[in-house]
Image (cartoon, rainbow, N blue to C red; front, side):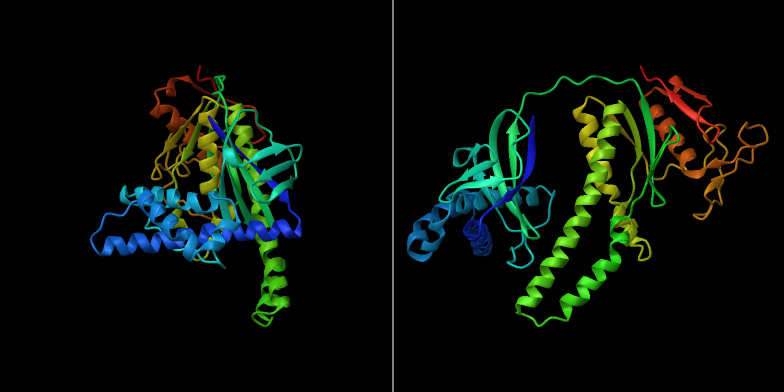
Amino acid sequence: MIRAHKIRLHPTKEQHVYLAKAAGVARFVWNWALAEWNRQYEVGENPAALKLKKHFNEIRREQFPWTWEVTKNASDQPFLDLGKAFTAFFEGKACHPKFKSKKRSKPSFYLANDQLELGDHRMWVPKLGWVNMAENLRFAGKITSARISKTADWWFVSIQVEMPDEIPVKKQAAVGIDVGLKRLATLSTGEGVENQAFLKTALGKLRRANKRLHRRKPGSNNREQARRQVARLHYRIACLREDALQKLTTRLADSYGIVGVETLNLKGLLKNRRLARSFSDASLGALRRLLEAKVAQRGGQVIKVGRFFPSSKTCHCCGWKWEDMALKDRVFVCQNPSCPYSQFPQDRDHNAAQNVLREALRLIGLIDQVATGTGSDDGVNLAVDAG
């Protein structure tokens, strides 16, 4: 198992210059290799990453001597990254590799395990020396590689560590999750997780910062300061969102062995011009991706329920469907007279989460182990024992 630990760096002014140079060399080599790959492909040749690397090293000392000022990994790794990118493109897993921009692309470069050394709150980089780290490496194991990158005004290092596989402890509990905008997640147990909408909260401050940026003269120091302020605001919003998602998914993965979720058409949802920003702010795709990775790592499984499954329109007790249910209807009222919940209106999202759980257990053949009972404040709680 390979895990990564991302740590913030505290470089000096001189070290800032070196890191920027190394990232610039990596970007330049990527663009050169991509241009050469496209040229060879157009003339009918068969380009390959190792061939391009060999050709670059032959002309490097004469044409690009400034690339020797930084670690050799900055100019070697982009060829391997380009080869992987084209492999993914030919397999239909990614789009065609694109050129990297100095202004829009994220500055970064790679370090192999033999090109770095870790000390007490510091890291050694070739041709640079020791760079201060905000914290020590959390994981114990064999360091495989590292990648230094810049976000907003700060440099970070992501260190990959090879660790022995943990023996997962199987958990017997199961839960269904209904995600949305009003509440980020509603569990079948009745628990609701607030959608904190970090972007919406900071939108006023972000708008003022953007206005200040566009009023500055292009190329001036004041404009650069305003741009950095906007970047810091975006980074803060992203960190707050990721922190909330990480804590939620870790808690769910530690508590439940079976998690039922709906497969949403996220690309289709983002086409709704009225709700696109809210869906992006909620980051439902990242929530599902983190949940799948953490549950699988702990020996559990995430069961995906089809997007067309009517979880919100169906009563979890009797199966009656509310066909003309609208988005504004936040309370589910069952119209089946024989249903025990016809006299007790249910929360719409809680009812949907219970339906998601039932459908997930049905898909894996454990539907007969579901039992209903009271226990939550809204009058119903789904207790599940999948063991």
